[in-house]
Amino acid sequence: MELARNLRVESVGRLQSPPALCLGQKASVRDAVVLMRQHRVGCVLVCQGDRLLGIFTERDLLRRVLAPGRPLSEPLLDHVTTDPVVVERTESLSAAIRRMEEGGYRHLPIVDAAGRPVGVLSVKRIVQYLVEHFPSTVHCLPPDPEAIPRSPEGA
Image 1: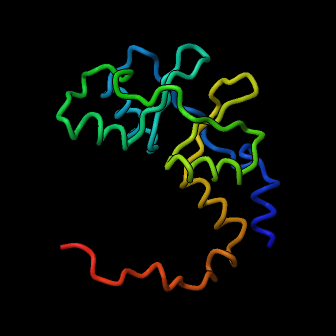
Image 2: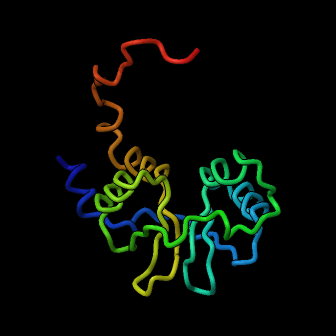
């Protein structure tokens, strides 16, 4: 199948992900929220110079800040995922997708050969790539009968 082959051959760098949005160690949660809203992204990276310290996502905002009722003025570094799983620009898309699926991640920092953050790979960008490059494969997928819930969902 052409899709499977392309995912093994194409590199993460081919997706042309937007540049990484980085904040310093002294940033607050509010700073991160403002930056994510301005750029309409789901995460920001926390960096010290060229070194990646952590990633802060919408999920972190909900689970670590809003749900426990913490103020947005708290230091961002207190709520990030430190030492996050990363992907290099030269790695295959299939390797990146596998890493995302295994870890349950929706965002992976992209780093260069020296480990410097250069972008963020998102599930949204991967889906865009699939739809742009394989429209007939994506649009002609048969329904999966096992994906239909056997009982109604919700209240």
